[in-house]
Length: 179
Image (cartoon, rainbow, N blue to C red; front, top):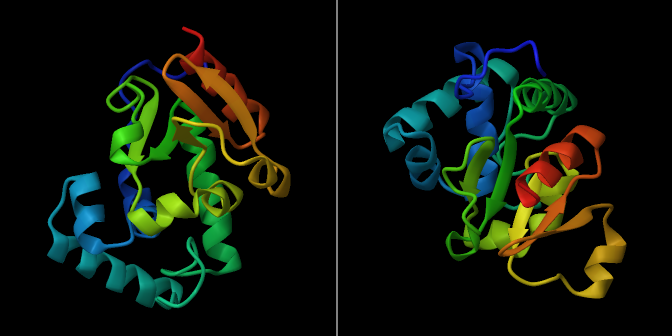
């Protein structure tokens, strides 16, 4: 969005605890989430418990990836609002394994998330559930995976980005892949 000031994106204070739920889903643990967002593990646990009580979320470790820390219609709507805010600032949330950063980690316009091992193995639902905008891949996924979920593959200098097919996501991803 051209009318917004070009300073580094920062999640608004009132949305940070909601973002925490996403990082718990993406990393799979309070310790990894704490490292990702720069707070202590006890703080992550305390903040999640308070938010879960307020929004009536239940932690269900046996549920599918992306739905383990709370899966409600209102949480999905709140997530869409947060994503719209972040994308309006020109920032993509890109996930991947530590080895697949493709030079994206720390780059302007990228909120990098190092995915947990299980989350990395099941990245397609994370795109579908709007927990991520894109996933950094070193190799193309198997052909059958590309046919089962609606995502777009973009060639980047050091690999591929599997992106959600929304226009705003694709526009920002193209800018990253084709500077």
